[in-house]
Image (cartoon, rainbow, N blue to C red; front, side, top):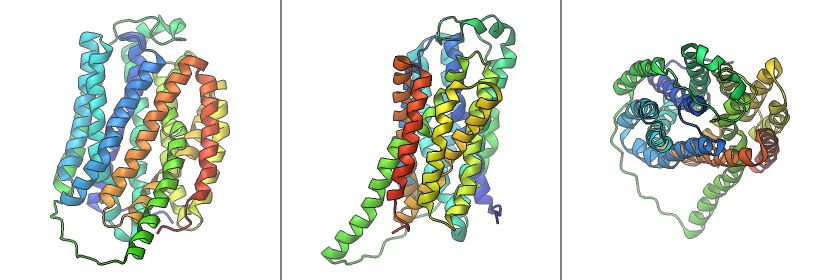
Length: 412
């Protein structure tokens, strides 16, 4: 039975997750729109911007996770969300004022550090807000983030569509190749969105605890015990690492090119924003379902089945249009993303005395793999086309699912 958490701390970091991921997910739709309105960009340039941003967040997360373990992470959680919004607006402002890709790129990439600061803090306190419901709470925490990821593309797409409807109508025949034609876009409604971050920043500032690290008692182990413990800790991470690297092409690497895929079909910003949102929303909902199933059944089988079943959806997505494309986006996002929270909880169980570091490390690795996946997809798309590239993504999803069978049945 699914029961909602009641802790105020949980809802504080979950609102922060929703806000953070809403603004982070707007970036790819914004870049796609800017490529036909203000700054011409190729798929490679879009992929590089998204990848650099994600790598900034991914590589910084273990560091912020250590700080969260030591201090509770109040300033990093609340400050991280505020930083994300500030850098997003700065990137948009520079794009409008300078029309320069590389100047816009600086704050766009720096935005990733704010997300890197927030995520390990949020995951730590979501799990610890109710210690006997760590897996369930973590899945709900990531569901809040997925709602943000789902809302962001649809929201910014609708705002841009409404503000530029007449201008876009003149260029629908030129959308096959981003950057062919540009016009001076109206992006003023986007700046007002920064006010939406105030409640989350305030709640986290007042609810996330500040703590002093307790001294650890010294333990004596034999050489054999130490070697066994080390192997037990490292091997599951190695297995997870290989799986996550391959999985990164499908989830989350591929979603950054769904707007470009359907822009080439002549879809409007609101339309390709919605299909991107559905991808993320499905991922969050199935995460709660898969998390509940993983408490009863073998999580390796659940992960394997979900990833393998997502492959046909990825394979067929670029060849479809209309309602069929929407349904396939839901299937691809839901099936490939449902195991996300399971990977985080497993990492926390491997390092029970450093859950912030474990959360940051695994989240960072997942995001880094997705960032590299985006870069690879962008490069392949310019070489062989987005349709063929998404079909390679389908193969990667299936391979990742099969590799999940190598994960241990139970956490060490």
